[in-house]
Length: 304
Image (cartoon, rainbow, N blue to C red; front, top):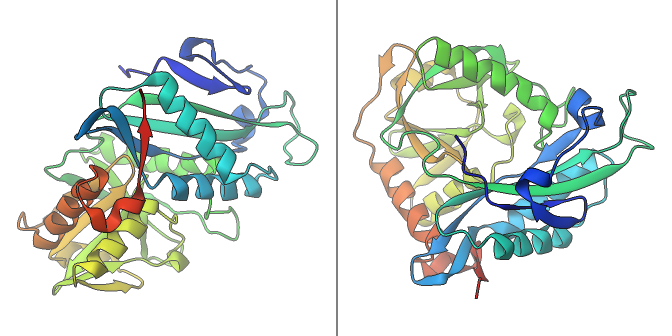
């Protein structure tokens, strides 16, 4: 059962969450013509009347660009203003997740992006660990990640997540926690809703953008932090077999944060994860406002 935050932003105004409802004829519901973002917030450990959001500016910019793919002009600064006011209206007292969503809100049956009304809403919910911080088991999915030539993968387009849903359920019903999707070239792409990293011989390796991955904001943060920690970082294609013999494998995402992988298929991975642990600890310090080197990554909102 989800604990939703009491106030949402819907159709240009703030209202109770239970009053934010759309019609069954809504265009985006039928054709997946929406795009979403997702960001975490926590109460400031040093100030009970303040909330900290991680990389708010990057999240707003990405959602604005996703909206552009839907032929919708939604400036990043407007998104940021609405999210800031949304947090003030809710004054959350525990770790939470914000879901902003842009969509074709017209009522109609023709799949198109022109001459159709668009809108934007925001809601949130309390959220702790999305995946077990102790590590997850992964199945290599029989479903493949889409290609950018058939779907704009640089945005979080809602319709694209049917593949993620199929892969996730396939994995869970087979006894695993999570799915790893390959791309059409047979290389490792990403998990159902997270980017993936491997560690080999002390080097951090990640599939690059050319592997049809999402341009993850947590992924970008991991790469930057690793470089600043003196870890060698390589972006290149990753083969399935490398997952099985890697020294460490982990997933990253707004909901998942940094989650170790303890098993891929029937191969058990090491529980000694020095690089994963170092990056995870560093990101935790940053998101809690305890690291001045990255203070510009954390956006504080005063509630009182």
